[in-house]
Length: 144
Image (cartoon, rainbow, N blue to C red; front, side, top):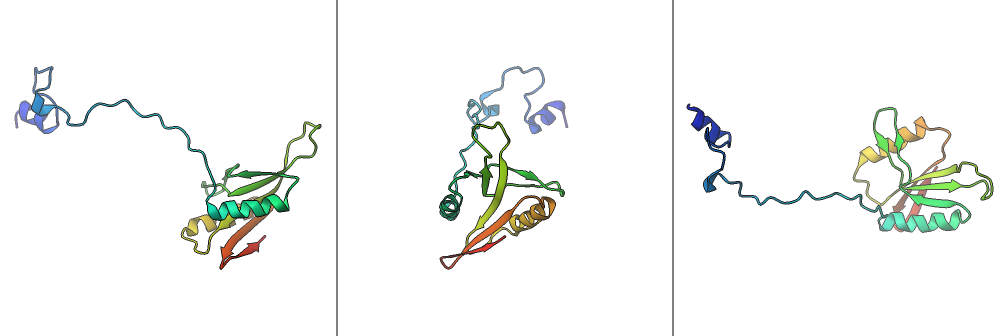
């Protein structure tokens, strides 16, 4: 194999050629790279419905969707659906107290890894209060 044949096989121009002939040109047009902006996280219908229940239950607390991410001992990360915070006082510059971490699911659980991560987080962070809410046949089954 000659060097010209090798360069053609590798998609390189022949030796001594600085400009690519038209048949060597890349068929894809050159575009500016797109900037990836972070997407705004929004709850799905089931999560939003349980969020309204949490708002009525914890009306004096701060409710946030996917606000924290816990690093688990296995090296994976777990982001609960809802987090409920309680502020000691508006006037005191104290840190918020985490009241509740909630995972919501619909009637069918498609991803068993999320359940495993929830259980691992519950055992790794015993000082946090965890709640698992699953909607089955129009009713909420809640386990704490």
